[in-house]
Length: 223
Image 1 (cartoon, rainbow, N blue to C red):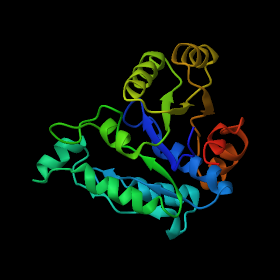
Image 2 (cartoon, one colour):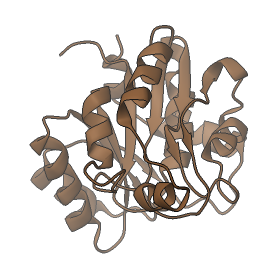
Image 3 (tube, rainbow, N blue to C red):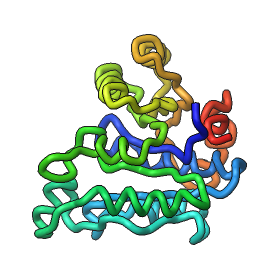
Image 4 (cartoon, rainbow, N blue to C red):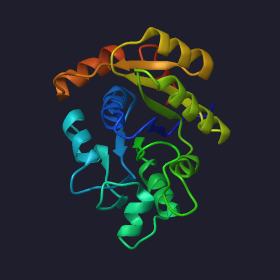
């Protein structure tokens, strides 16, 4: 397998925890060399700023952020946010921006929503993922319903020949759901993240250091 230029973090649903997972992965990968976080498409920018959240959680220097990309008002799907803003999202400039950023650092790229979120009239988030060709980390809930949602995501990714780096399950530990995802999805769970009562940079750093990617699968893909 060729050396990866980073990871693409997707989710099985909106609000599942992709941003926190992205911050944790960035923390974990700092030992491998220069790393950057990038949110190529952000909607609802007045209320949500995932780049600011990752900056706070991971204590990012400016060199660890890539801030180019699509920034739209209205907290809705990218295709609708673009339509309301009287514009259209084009994937080519985002691919060019990624290639520029990836020349000097590994990237942790966070998607918007899940893999089949529409970006424009013809393309979905997974089409951007194919263009960037990064191994994918799936943020998934640990609770009831996650088996179906996670396996559907895995199937869509494999249908496009994308590499699945691993799954991070978020919520109360559930050994049966973890086992089912690993067995039926043939994908490793690389972390089980609790719902932190209080989320802070120190708490997330401790979890990422001790509990994320304990087998070194993610870091090995960057060597």
